[in-house]
Amino acid sequence: MKTIVIGVIGADVHAVGNKIIEYVLKNAGYNVVNVGVLSTQEDFINAAVESNAQMILVSSLYGQGEIDCRGLREKCVEAGIGDIILYVGGNIVVGKQDFKEVEKRFKAMGFNRVFPPGTNIEEDLPFIKQDLGE
Image 1: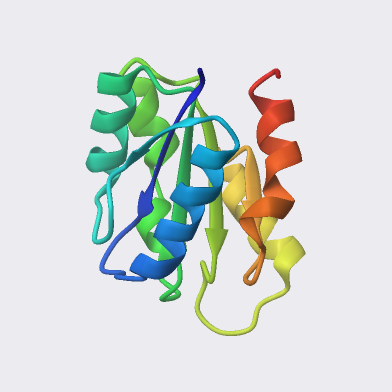
Image 2: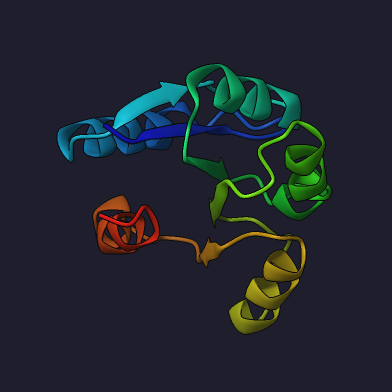
């Protein structure tokens, strides 16, 4: 069974969305490690290392995701999990910005996939399955 670490990064407390993501992923057959809300990059990385996870899925709704996510891939490399799959989604930047530009910036930071605000986790399941090699 593949393991996915999920949580809400930074000073964000959107617990409802986080619980929905956990529920959908568990029902899809994944082992889910939920670091919860108000989580640091280190929380995600430590959970991924401890659980031997294949993916980290970062959520953010309060608009500061770009700041909160900077350097995550580099910290994964330092922790010995440099090839882990990184997803991010939600309202991850301040204000209305062209999503293609936002996606480009997050991919440059080392994220494998970037999802726009309002994306339903069910829509992401085919990508998750594909990226996990299932």
